[in-house]
Image (cartoon, rainbow, N blue to C red):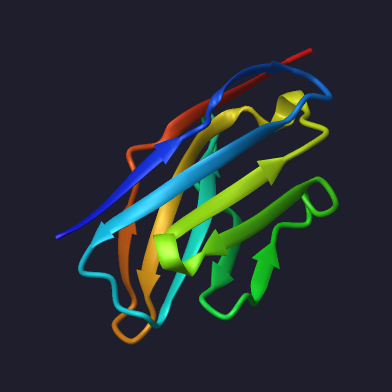
Length: 117
């Protein structure tokens, strides 16, 4: 019913940049939050950033000033611009769609981001 397709992951050197994209398709209720989570080996999944349809954002302290989340409501797409990447940013990044009225979550398949030192 709902599908999230991610793109943009890859291998970069420290200090480099990547832009992740996630396009949602299916039955999308308008009141929703889209965001990015990440999970590194041996660690729990953590919120990186999320954004409401009206543009209100939450961003993790560890990436503030380096990562920027945005969305295109007409395309049901969320983006994560990642600059000044550090090796500690290495993780699998997951796109998330949350329907706020029911607190129902949908997840993308995950995309690997690897930052070499």
